Length: 268
Image 1 (cartoon, helix red, strand yellow):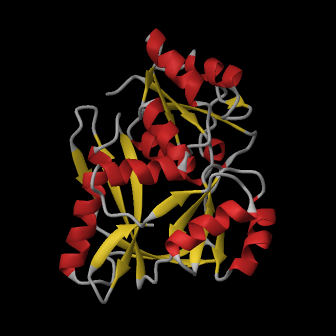
Image 2 (cartoon, rainbow, N blue to C red):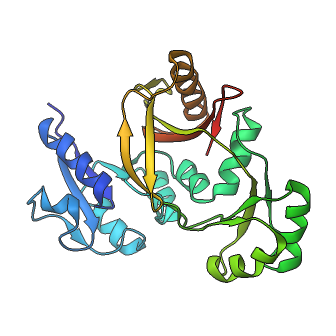
């Protein structure tokens, strides 16, 4: 029996599923999030901490109660996690460096490119100005996707640029976040693979699934994915190769596009 206590930064939908799995294994979990967050609703422990999972003091309070610290969302303070890891007061998984890289979608793309993982062509916008975005538009051609590098998820922080006249509206919608532009992908389906990375760097994956989105939120999941078997296998190979490049242990959701005409898959 594993008697270690696992602290979880974030108590949303993913945290709830994590807690449910831990309960079946008799692993104690302590959650840092707002009161009555979904994960806390299925775990009546009195040791949960109410607060923000990006608050350094709250993270330190959580770490004091735990043997292992993990996160269900990347929008957290990675610097305090790195400090706790160096103090060896708690085990942090995955590595704070991995989480920090995932927090910036453009750095994530660069990391994938450097490791020869198929991913769309992207350019960082030098500034949040009409001229800077037009510059990257000239490199990519129209249409293209303008995206926030940070604090973007579930379709938030994305804006399709069909012509230069869309840029001004996009800049207002995306605010002052750092931006990058990504080549337009006329994909056939969206695929996803869940990959487990162990502390020794070994990876295992679940079968490829197909995701259907409505209003930028996952609405349906088809398992297995409704694509050829060789495409399912290729998606798993791409996902596993990507997760092998990361540091630390964890369960990672890898999302990608499938192009039916070419059979290619690459990261979304």
